[in-house]
Length: 114
Image (cartoon, rainbow, N blue to C red; front, side, top):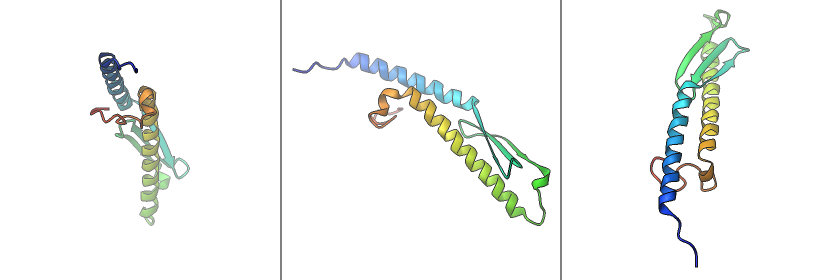
């Protein structure tokens, strides 16, 4: 005969995990990642919440005869910064949702808000 799970304890754990995840998301808003392209001629800084904080372009990278190159450098730096920020967010959320990772990660239980 199997023992029934303690629903009160499970609910308490889920509520704590929700609070921890909300805190982690708030922390991500204050953490930043940086990416560069073109040997550092374009630098992008974004938050873990994917908000662009800074875009720096070395004047030497501005060639009026080749605006496409600058566009490509900016796009490459932004995309790399987004990838790094998503990786940061995934690591932070994985640390919070540890027990759920075995069940498919946050949302794996089909519980709204997780």
